Length: 261
Image: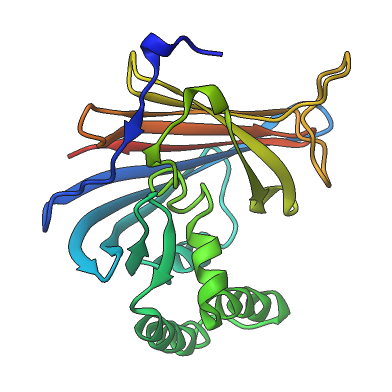
């Protein structure tokens, strides 16, 4: 437990109207082969985040993905399709509550129309069952607002920025505990534990473990070996950088976000 002198009593979501902030979101996936050789792929997204104002009690943010790149020492299969997956969500008007959590999509109909047109263009160059499954997965997400919100809240999208941890903190009740589903780890559910530390305005993220000697992370599906991260803000509540590392027996994924301007 962190000492009270290093404790942030309150994080406040207080964005500046019409001011554009540029962030770099990176997902690095390392898959382990049986010979322990790593195959790593980095997905890098440059995203412009702008607060547009409030609609009733929700903050409305425009999330514009200006660039998507992939990096790897190996060739990347279907790289262009992977980019199209992310560009399907390249312009989002997200409704965010005062805790900083995405709860509504204001331009979902427009996103659906754009994806419909994209599918028609892609079918000119691609075909096959795997390709149609790829299209169907994105279509299924965009057909339902709840699924779109869930996807955008994952750490692979915008979950590190819209983390839902703004508000009052009670030192006596720390750590904050909340359930989370790891989409990239076969939808495994764990319980996050979050501590606040204002020495560097940090939020420290870990996972609930068993009380036995092995001290394993409690999960409902795959065994998660490691789950740990940090979110660093300035005194005004602006996110400066953050990361989350998740690992099981076959891979580890490092999600990160960095304010670049």
